[in-house]
Image 1 (spheres, rainbow, N blue to C red):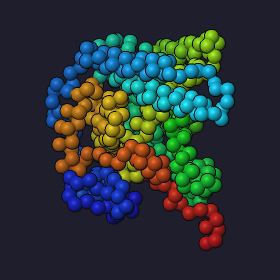
Image 2 (cartoon, rainbow, N blue to C red; image 1 turned 180 degrees about the vertical axis):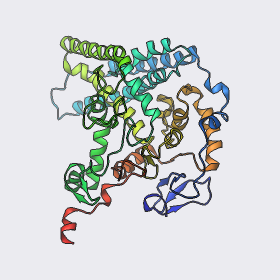
Image 3 (cartoon, one colour; image 1 turned 60 degrees about the vertical axis):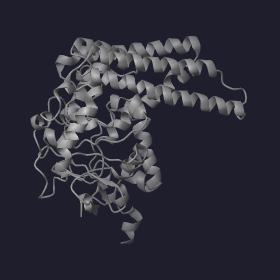
Image 4 (cartoon, rainbow, N blue to C red; image 1 turned 90 degrees about the vertical axis):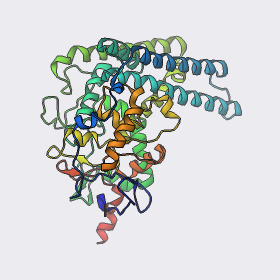
Length: 427
């Protein structure tokens, strides 16, 4: 039996392990007495060609120019083919074409802008160029244009890398405990998500999970209302206190960052003011069609990546008593994203390399991933799930709901395996 009581099939250590129903399973199980010893960060770095860590101003700015050209092209095509005027007859064929046209534009422009978002993310990590001042200049522009508080998120994302899959001090997509899900004694539903799941059923609850993550998850996270860690920057429990990305005095940040956090907040406010005046001049509908639609797709993509690259029922979460940096980093999963790898600079298919060495530029991550895979895979330590991303998303939405405890080695569990209240009453 494998993790969580799953039957695991594999013909060899290097083969992809799956459950009996064909779902991918991580090859590393820290609860297994025969689990391999983890290498150090230095040992992993030693197998990567040194040129993978060389950063280039010209190479990075080429991708900024490339993505900007694609965004301009997408906007030009939409401008030439679509009208911002609402069709007079909403039940007409023309209205259907209008609706499909603007949604197509929103999807592809959001997809392209996610490339800019990834480039700004590279800036925050210091992987964009050898100069952090240059990085922060371009990162600030690209992220603020997408309503991201650059310096605030730069800090919290760095913490996400420092504390990956840490149940207490992690950052973003920190798992809920069974108590937080509304479970008592592990099987009794006493409210919260557990009660919602029982009320609406398995499939609708998975759809609710996807909606919560991809549609409202990002703004809720920035506001400190979802997915943040359980400890403040001082290492003390928050006990329900909200830690957002906008207040310079938020317990999410050390005092030395207050000016930068304030600068980011002012930048976001300035962006919203610009949108307000644009709406006053051109109308709410045109601004929504040109900007807000693509922004929602952009936010969906970035949450999807952070959600899927670290979560699977077979990938461990570690309490403070078990967590180490290497354990957390090696809990990352590489996944295939097809054509979207081109637009998003392979952030999802080379994510293991990125979490191990965030200072490495993305355009060298392919070479680094091949070296890391050759080193880690024979040891049973490299996570690659070949499942198409949309199928993996559905599976994670159905199976990764909570963990039993915040200590020790934990695995995600599903509310689908919890008895319904009516069935418990029968017993």
